[in-house]
Amino acid sequence: MGKVLRSGVSGPRLYRGAVAGAVAFSVMVLAGSCNNNGCLENQNSLPLAGFYSYSSDTPLTLNSLNIGGVGAPNDSLLCKSGDAISQIYLPFRSTADVTSFYIAYADSALVAHGVRDTMTFAYDSYPYLASEECGAMYRYRITSVSYTRNVVDSIAVTDSLITNIDAERIRIYFRTSDD
Image 1 (cartoon, helix red, strand yellow):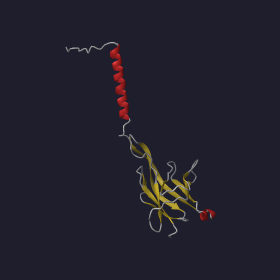
Image 2 (cartoon, helix red, strand yellow):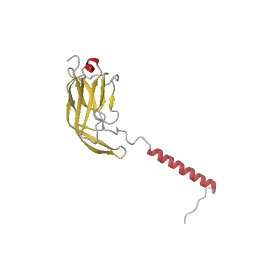
Image 3 (cartoon, one colour):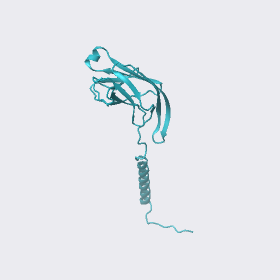
Image 4 (tube, one colour):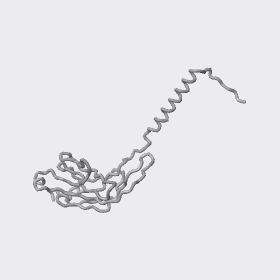
C-alpha cells in the first residue's frame, strides 16, 4: 500500500486553505472565460453607404442632409443636418423584404421647393450563425434598388451580400454644382 504523507496542516487551517484554493481556481476559470479570444467581429449586418459626386466619382462629405427610415417605428432619424458625414449605415429590417430611406436636404433653396429623395432596397434576409462566440445575426442579399432622382443621380450596389464585415457596399451618387 502507498504511504500517506501529512503536511502538518490539519483542522481549520486545512479547511481555510482548501476554500482559498477553490476560490482562486474559480476566479482563474472565470477570468479565462472573459478573455479576448471570443467574438471580436462586428455582430450586426448593416449596409454601409458612401456618398460620391456623380461627375467626378470622388467621395463627398455632406453636412446638410437629414436621413431617416420611411415607415420606421419610433425615431428613425439616422443623421441630422449639421453632421458632416461621408458614409452612413442603413439598417435593413429583418422582418421585411424592403426598407426605404428618405434624404431631406437642408439647403434653403431645396427646402423651399420640398425637394427630397427616397431610396428603397429590396432584399432577401436569412439568419446566419457566425460562431459560438458571436452568435447568430441576419445577412441580406440586395435584389433591387429604386430611388428618386432629384439630387441623387444614381445608386450603385458594389456587393449585394450584406454581412457583418464593415465594408462599403452601396454608393450614392449626388449631383453637385459641378454637374
